[in-house]
Every structure is written in C-alpha cells, then in structure tokens.
Image (cartoon, rainbow, N blue to C red; front, side):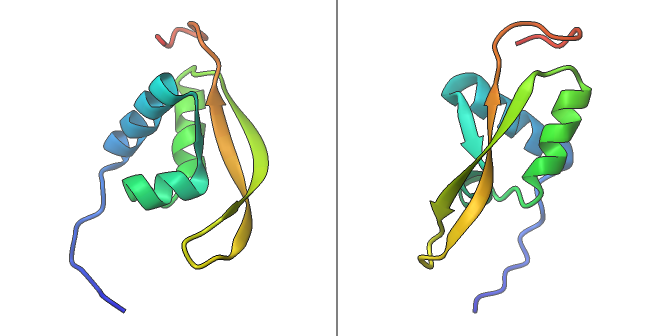
Length: 88
C-alpha cells in the first residue's frame, strides 16, 4: 500500500469540479468522482450544490470498482436551467 502526503482538495474546488462535470457531462457517479477527481464525500458536495439552488437528481445503479467489486452507487444528473437563483 502506498501512502502519499498529497493534500486534500478544498471543498469549494470539489463543488466546482462536480458542477462543471455535471454541466458538461450530464451525469456523475460516486465511484467516478472518487477515482478521477479524488472527491471522497460526493454526496455532501452535491447537497451543498443543491442548497445553492442547483437542481440535481440522484439515481442508483450498480458499478464495478477497480478491484472487481460491485457496488450500488449514486449517480447524479443536473437538470438544465436556472433554479432558485443558481446559474446553469
């Protein structure tokens, strides 16, 4: 097991990363965000975006991680448009 001293990504940057990904890509799964962006608590960041007015739906599906283990994960979809004052 390799341990690094890489600092965690600031919460504001995590939210922005998720927002941009959803705006460009349409959906984002928990496993994808952890693997590709290093965001460990995706649900919290999505909740914060919702509190800021973004209309993000949660769906569930099964995905396989890098070890071959199947997990039931959340994937998030941003509904287009302005909601509660948040710009798309």
